[in-house]
Amino acid sequence: MTMMPQMTSVVMATVIGLAMVSLVAGISGTATFYTPPYILVMVIVASLAMISLVAGTSGTATFYTPPYTPSACTGFQDEGPQIAAASDAFWGGGAACGKRLAVTCTGATNQGVPQPCTGQTVTVKVVDYCPTGSCRATIDLSQEAFAAIANPDAGKILVEYHEV
Image 1: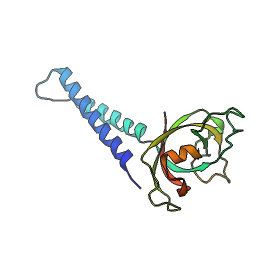
Image 2 (image 1 turned 60 degrees about the vertical axis):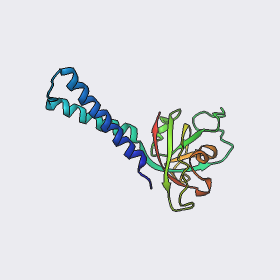
Image 3 (image 1 turned 90 degrees about the vertical axis):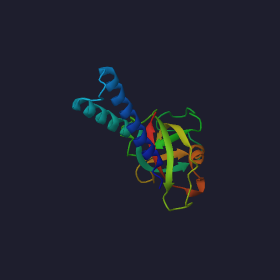
Image 4 (image 1 turned 45 degrees about the vertical axis):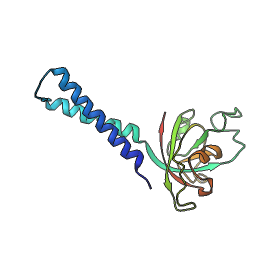
């Protein structure tokens, strides 16, 4: 499993935090670069919040094949190929309907291809429900969406996703 998305988030939050400290020091006009402790605490809290917003949620993904209608959210309305079905992990009684998720493959589940990820991220719209019992993953992507981020021969992959 690769940790690049999380490391990128940490680096980005650190850079933003340092920029905020520099900005506050510059605004205060002090030549000694003294920053009051309460400002540092605010910068640290803001940086940690950014890490959790950017890093996303870890889970697993599988795929399903056409026809994609009817669906639990939109009935017989065709929403195109970049769609997904939500598991109970985030279905929320239908609250997930219509949410757009950025999904990135982070690694193999050791059930198929050892290095399935393409390095791409796909944005999907949640249009269906993947019920417990028949759902083998956190998110069930359309075949097209899955193929954009991983080799379909893998069948099931590790992913990171967040709402966009």
